Image (cartoon, rainbow, N blue to C red; front, side, top):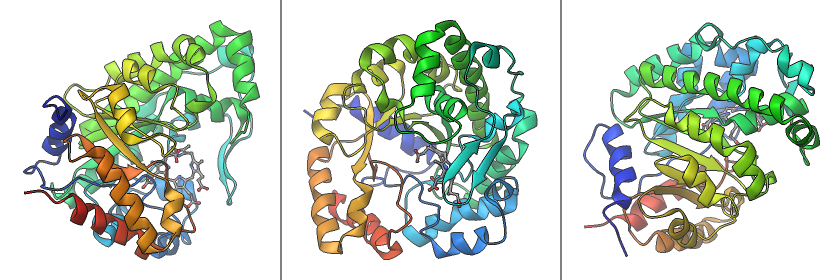
Length: 350
Ligand code: CP3
């Protein structure tokens, strides 16, 4: 049953766009700026990743590149979820190709106790400046989505020291030192709230919280070790700004994520969009959920898969088309453009 409530997230999103509701399903992509784009690679060849983030003119350019090239309905800030960790002095580095590294990971209760406070405004003024530059350049053409990592996902990098398969160091700290875990979550949740609210004050129209690796937890552990901190974080976001709450591997966690908050719940491709929407409730919006690997297939296959997702959304307001996770580096740009055009074409209504 289509519900008016379902439209609330859509209306919020579109109000944020400062324009009339579009007659089509809005679409934007996670990691729509990145190495699959030749113009990104060209700029990136002149800067190390962190340097690019710290140079507002260049970061603004990267943010804007996909908007024209792909015809998406939102820009997503070019920055990173780990930038707020720099003032902790644990040796954050973005190595070539293998993703981020933290040279001195936080593994013990004593490590957590020794963490200094994070002064977000002093740490990432360049991010807020990038938001100002992008907002000015967009002039309301499409909304700008700001973002941050969720405390669990950011903690997983800080504790593991980089990407992980089993998250054993993170889980050991959580289970063996619950007091230290709580303290760590509180430090990260409060810094993250400031990070998001700084982006909003600088002009971001909506924000997305990435809990990319939360799917490694059981529902009981999510409830105990994560939910209170997510709830506090989302509640601390400047009122009136739509929050998109995203994770992967979350089929068993969607109800709890919804409890934690967010105007829109981000879905990965491992769930059926209609069943997931019924589960989280039609008084929130959903975003998703094409498998990004589908973009490697020929356009005819992409068309079938896009159609299937739009059929599950059934024209209800409150659906934002997106991938279930980020664009892969190997993705042909033409396929991405074709997908965006298809969503607009197939969802056009009255
Ligand atoms: O359009 C966009 O979405 C780009 C903005 C963006 C980046 N990182 C830029 C980036 C966003 C939204 C992020 C979030 C982010 N960063 C997440 C959550 C999103 C997700 O995909 O789950 C995570 C887990 C990180 C941490 C991080 N930063 C990783 C794992 C990596 C390596 C990624 C890779 O493909 O190697 C980074 C570096 C990074 N962040 C790149 C980009 C474009 C690649 C850096 C490069 O050019 O070498």
